[in-house]
Image (cartoon, rainbow, N blue to C red):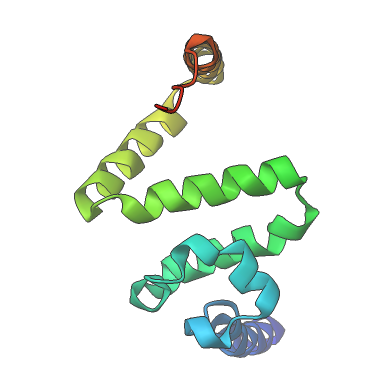
Length: 135
């Protein structure tokens, strides 16, 4: 009997907390700090689902603790994400789900491979001389 009583209280508590956790705010309702962190999404924020908004609010919560370089990377990634079509986003999500199912050693090998490709790309980009303005 006590267990049923506890379950009722737990269910009531969850019912009260879920709206607080999943509250989808309009862009204007976000705090200035959240708006700063999520600035690249300002144009499409009000069109995002509650789940997407909640996920991005998690990023905004961690954003102030990041270094300036990490904050710049977050913004760069949000800009790129905001420019993707829904189909491209779905494709990326599916690739991520597939990646998460890999054994840890294969995930680590894949990360290492991607780091090497990224380093080679950056090295190649820095080797190209900047264009000189025409007189």
